[in-house]
Length: 137
Ligand SMILES: [Zn+2]
Image (tube, rainbow, N blue to C red; front, side, top):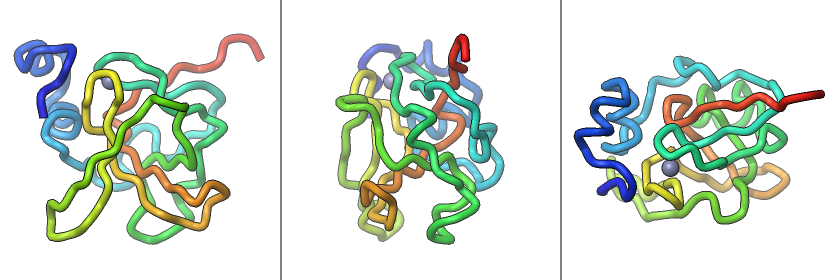
């Protein structure tokens, strides 16, 4: 999938090899390894590539709980309206739904059905995100 706002060359220069693998090659970081999997600060999570705001910290869930296969990545029960798009992903012999940034089309993670208040469980890679703390409290 081609990024819609940056060239491959720019992306390779700006991202670490791991970030490039996740955002541009639909990779997945190791669980419990990313910097945001267990954070609970108040603020906004945005796309690493284009900066679009994707998930508010209010929607973040405890990633030590929930289905075993989804633990260890930043998890959210909803995205901001219009911030993400979905694509079928049949890689790895599994039928999953891929979550991408609606602006630059970078890969972010996957979405699953779960017993959350919205019925949705976004399982997102830390390295696909940047975090902006709320100013003023
Ligand atoms: Zn983006």
